[in-house]
Length: 236
Image (cartoon, rainbow, N blue to C red):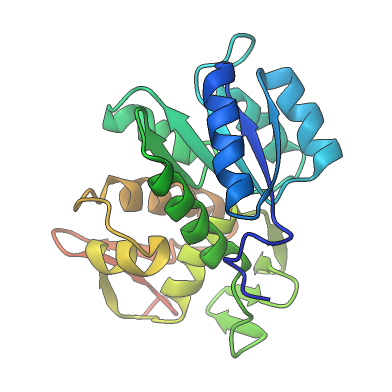
């Protein structure tokens, strides 16, 4: 099955405005997605466990807890379901915060329905795409098992979000090469962010913290003014 087809894909819509929930749900059902909608964070956490969605559209401003808290909660439970934040704030810092707590993307209100559908398809392409040619990829101290979708650093299992996983896989597939931020943006996120590379900087920083805890030296190095390089050995 095409991983970006709406068929057999479940979307949970979380927004405290009934009109937005209804509009998004109708649009997604028209695209053949199966939908469920709730209006607060508490119900969202329960629905994630019972409905088991393939992707979550999550409003940041909810009446009981914000979308960041919901995401932190489910990530702490080991739930890696992709999260697309719906935010009324356009500040880069606010967006980066959402991404660093484990979100996968964001759209700013007011948004177009076509943009929402496009973002969903992009996220599903990078989180549900076909297997890589190599089932196991080992570069230096890090091993990726594509079949199990697991990452081990010096034998220790490290929990990554789907986007972090894809970012690491891209960098490990191009070891000892300087990758420009724009190059990473285009490959990992698959569409234009209007040249805003803050999302790359944020994710690299978040990924580093998870990897560096288990390595002798940082495996991702910054080439100032250019981009980043995954180092396969200390000598690279």
